[in-house]
Length: 133
Image (tube, rainbow, N blue to C red):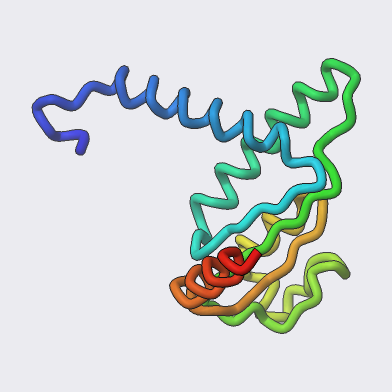
């Protein structure tokens, strides 16, 4: 995209700023809510971590408590290493120690649950379950 003749870095930057602010506004309302991270082992945790950090810093500056009571469901095809992330990080000799996305999400407060599942199957089942509500 950056070598296209119509590429404009300022426009890309402005769009990214708008995107991040909109995402942050959603994270601001996360107390007691749920986050679904489906098949996003790299970008998802990084963007969410930065957004949550920004929201929490702004809250603390205004004397408000940080985001809490949320649950993060991480869904991926990869084996989760059979580690109970509610017990903290696994030791370095456990393969789950190297699941960076689980480590990142487990450090973000709230509760992190890992679901090993085909992403398309998970979304299809979730869709059908929500239709019944």
